[in-house]
Amino acid sequence: MSTRWLNYLVNKMKKTKDTSTETGILNAAKRVFIKKGMTGARMQEIADEAGINKAMLHYYYRSKELLFEAVFKNAFSMLAPKLNKVINADVPLFKKIEDFTSSYISFVVKHPYIPTFVIQELNRNPDFVKNLVAEEHFPNIEVFKKQVEKCIENKTIRPINPEQLFINILALNIFPFIGAPLLMGFTGTNKKQYKDLMKQRKTEVAQFIINAIKV
Amino acid sequence: MSTRWLNYLVNKMKKTKDTSTETGILNAAKRVFIKKGMTGARMQEIADEAGINKAMLHYYYRSKELLFEAVFKNAFSMLAPKLNKVINADVPLFKKIEDFTSSYISFVVKHPYIPTFVIQELNRNPDFVKNLVAEEHFPNIEVFKKQVEKCIENKTIRPINPEQLFINILALNIFPFIGAPLLMGFTGTNKKQYKDLMKQRKTEVAQFIINAIKV
DNA sequence: ATTCGGTTTAACCAAATGGTTAATATTTGT
DNA sequence: ACAAATATTAACCATTTGGTTAAACCGAAT
Image 1 (cartoon, each protein chain N blue to C red):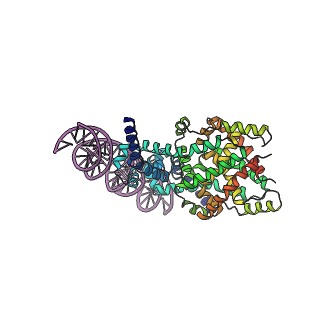
Image 2 (cartoon, rainbow over the protein chains, first blue to last red; image 1 turned 90 degrees about the vertical axis):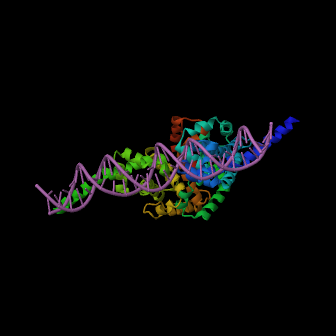
Image 3 (cartoon, each protein chain N blue to C red; image 1 turned 90 degrees about the horizontal axis):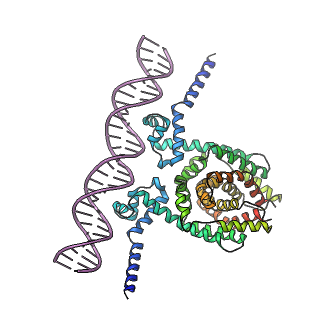
């Protein structure tokens, strides 16, 4: 009986917490930090974006540093579990490569700036990655490595260092978005045309990788 | 006779300009901007790095914005002409891919932070690319595109959109450096081990690409 | 009605930051 | 040798910025 009342309270707490100030701040901060980076973002701008007083930022997150940390971990946690799931799935290698590509591109369509943000800030402060590796959902590629090695034994694919293959898959999927402004210059395309190129990749990238390794 | 003296003077001017304050500032600014980005860099830190008074920065470059622009164009001009030369060289496609990879990796070994810097700042301010496209040495991929199309006609390689191939080449070469902190986390390698992986790529990346397109 | 905990705000503060100025030092042309 | 131009510096300035504080607000339990 009292448990029921407690649950009600807990739920109510969760609900209000989710919709109100604290997460409102986090979302506003996310938008601003992603757009301007840690050093370019201003606390006042975040407060304005959230429609509240600047002091609230410190009330809930104490400092810019900590607020940024919360944003960064939140952004990373949107990305990591999905990657992890695909990488460790129990499906054939070629299918896995197709799934990864398709899944990643869908993600980027929904959250266009997250990968760039993560990589950019990781470059600014490489030690940050230590915090992440310790996290629960940090991607682990051991299963993938074993799978690749087995495929090599089977002569399904040519010999290749599994880490290199993994890097190649990530590179071919992620770089076109991170390097978009530069690549638009090189290819002489505008936003729309470049978007079409990205759409085309959705089917072609996986095939490119498979061609490269298929024996 | 007077021409000789004039030449002497011109050379002297050039030399002093090259070695002294103005370029000293540019080099210091380059180091600081590349390390901290436009928004993270401080004018005082640049002055300290150059070993001069902060007012000199404004004396020679007027504002932080303009100093940054000078640094950015300088950095980009180290990268672009080389790419351009390799891309437009009159050599067979497969050889060209090998040359590009080898040439790019040598460059990165010498100037590790330039590509990351360029792409990062281009993301911060995508309009910047307009300035660059107009520049003399901005890479043009028309020759490359025609070459790829001819190879497809010859049945030397499978059908592929030349732009996509170009993007893939860039991705496989550039991303491993931009994404280094993240990839070190994923692969569980330290700096030295990761460097070894990069060394291995120097020979393997080109082969990976060629395998992917060779018929 | 009052008290009490958490929430929110306006006003404020010290340090940092990009930029300027006026005076000094150095180089250069005559 | 000297005057004009150029280079360099110390001190200064206005604004911005992250952060604090004390007071007001508000919903709920007593």
